Amino acid sequence: MPLLQRLKLFLKCVSLVLMSGMAGSAAAIEVLRVLAWPGYADADLVREFEQRTGAKVEVTLVDADEVLWQKVSHNAATDFDVFAVNTAELQRYIAAALVVPIDTRAMRNIARQLPRFRDRPSIPGIVHGGETFAIPYAYAAMGIIYDRAQIQTPPQSIDILWDPRYRGKVLAYNGGTHNFSLVAQALGLRRLFGLGAADWPQAVRKLIALRRNAMTFYVQPDESVALFKSRQAALLFANYGSQQVQLLKQAGVDVGYAIPREGALAWLDCWVITRGARNRLLATAWIDYLLEAKPSDALVTRQGLANTTAESPANRNNDRMVWLEPVEDVGRRNRLWARIVSGDSEARVLRP
Image (cartoon, rainbow, N blue to C red):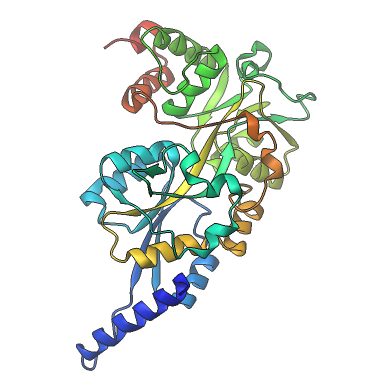
């Protein structure tokens, strides 16, 4: 029996039981508590799911990985049923037993996914002990966006972010985890996500140089668009990739998008189910629904992101994508980055 039919039957049975024990009062409505990034649970898509299932969906939005962690880990993951997280961040949720395996047997829309996303064991971090903990949903490469009026030739190397010709014209991302991996690429280090003792000083030195070349730092996609346009930036390290390209073009800015020869860090967001989910069948149905054509297409047309069901023209150079992996020490990266942004010298940044 298809997943949605099973779910409808389950909810109908629950409703009948509740009605029989609640004389004269309305039956309780099943509620799905969704924790999502902007654009992952648009109101019209939510309404359609509600109409199909008879359930109510409560959506809470997050804007940073650490915020996501705080919300899910609070109260041992009992505040939400399903959430979206990238494959690198996912590992700490699995390690902390905050998420549970997903029963994919009744998820018919998995068959719509591209072969590389259906082959879940080949994607680092989403299969553990033979069980699937996450379903791939959206992805983007962190390439370089450039203003065509100021730069006519697509950038070939990450090094352009440090080019003195563009001092004060570079818009950088305000995040320690990704920025240390970015400079590891720029320095040609062997391990992008596992810096060794000898790597930290040169990585810090390189990030201090980036701070000096940058006009400022952003966190959210909309913020990056406003800053890029108002301050007439020439370059942008695109943490959100093709999503930012689309937003900038919609804002009337003529930009190009380049994947440098060193490769581009790339994130793959997946849907997962919390240990504290009240109704795992309902949570699974939500994930399956989002793999349908309408929700998947909305990622592309509305957000400028790539989905897992169709090839993305914005991410042609798949061979140069470097999927994010768990880093050696998130806390240390963020702590050092905060010191770098504050203007500390290399010695002060590296102090114990």
